[in-house]
Structures are given as structure tokens and as C-alpha cells.
Image 1: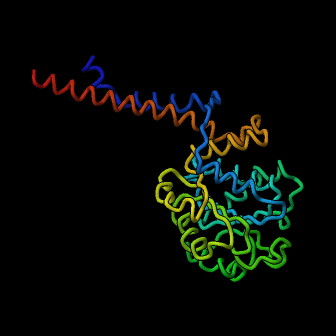
Image 2 (image 1 turned 60 degrees about the vertical axis):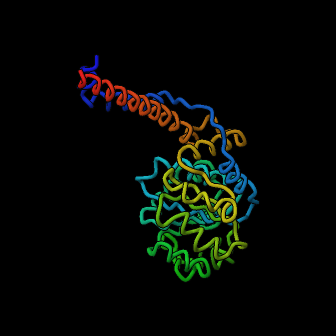
Image 3 (image 1 turned 90 degrees about the vertical axis):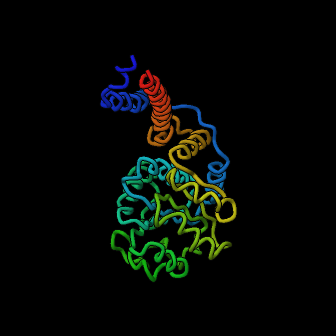
Length: 285
């Protein structure tokens, strides 16, 4: 038995992992989620929005992180639209505008057909400069954004009337995969003007620990990793009845795969340690 396991072709392990990850996705398994305080507080911040409030939603990630961040971005877009907010999309990452257009096509066009581009939402697009962009638009947005992503003059867009800087927003949300992202928004926007607007973020799992010290002073809540996305989806489903819409349950669905994959990894680690000590025992003999 020891020799068989010790000489096991690693491709069998890869196959088992593939099965463990695929089965929950194929069968649409989801599991009950206990909502953390930081996710609940982030949700409450969006829930406080009133019709006509302005929300700057920065999708600061790329397709490599979409598996973890796309579900929470979808939830944020739906939640803001449901509250009747005006959504100003932008990104500090080059491929962000394409992800913004995907969110618009996925959420706003089918589920909120009465929302009009330029009146209720706008894609401001991407500007290079990382945190330098934040440093400019925090005091003069139109100095950097002279057109939107589609090439329309910024002053010709009705919802830009009265908007001079990020300080005119009621809420800023960064869905962030790293630099530049949530941390830079905290450092160069929220910290510089603490009383001008509210700020929350969604982030990848590895980015969450450095952001936790900013709770609750700079931001009241944080949606962290696919676990946080699943928790946010649970709150959305409970309040807005989205149980029968799969696109608003992606986080919950992916948590099943993550849970089983983690269980398998722990079992393999334990098995590897058992084989190690068995091998030492055999060597002594």
C-alpha cells in the first residue's frame, strides 16, 4: 500500500482535483453562507443610497482576477441600480473599460432597460497613471476625463453636469485586484478628503489583509474574495429575491468548488505527511 501511494502518478491527483472542482459547478451546488460583519457593513453602505445619488464604481481588475471579482462587481452594479443611483464607471487598469461594458450588458441593459446611457450611467474608461489619476480627479475630474470611453465630450453628457471632481460623489466603490486599486483610493482620495464621500471596496483574497487596518475609519466595510462575494449575494437574494437568477449567484456557486478543493488539499497534505513518516520508518528497517 505504501509503495503504491508513494509511486502514485501525480496526474491522478490532478484528475481528482478537476473532478472535485467541476462537480459543484455542473450540479449548481451552493452552501449556506454566514455573512461577516465587514461584508454586511459594505452592503449597508450601498443600501443607504437614495435615488439620484452619485456612485463612482472603479473596476480596477483584469480578466485574470475576474473569477474572483466579477461576481462582486455584478452585485455592486445591480445593487446601485436598484437603489436608483447614477453610476459613474471608470478603471485604473487598461482592460477595465471592456469589463465595464460587459457589466453594463450583463446587468443594466437586460434588468434595467429604463436606465439610459449618459443620463443614469456612463463609462468614463481608463486613463494611464495609476494613483496619479486619483490625485488629479479628486480635485478636477474633467481635467483628465475630457471624453467618455465612447468618445463623447464630457460636457455633452447630461449626468456630468454639476460633477467637477470625485468629491461630488456620494459613494466610491473600488473592485480591486491590486495596484492601482483600493489601497490607492484610500491613500490619495478618502484619506485626503475624509468627509466628502463614503468609500467601500471589494478585493481579492490576497489583497484583503493590507486593507483591514482601514476599517472602519477610511471605509466601513470590505467585500473580500469569492467568500465575500458569496456573502454579498446572499444578502442581495434575501432582500431582492434573486434566488432564481444564476448570474447573481456566481459567488455562491463558486464557493462550492473552493470548499471541496480546500478539503481535498488538506487531505492530500495529511496523506503526504503520513507517507513521509512511513518512509522514514521503512528506511530504518
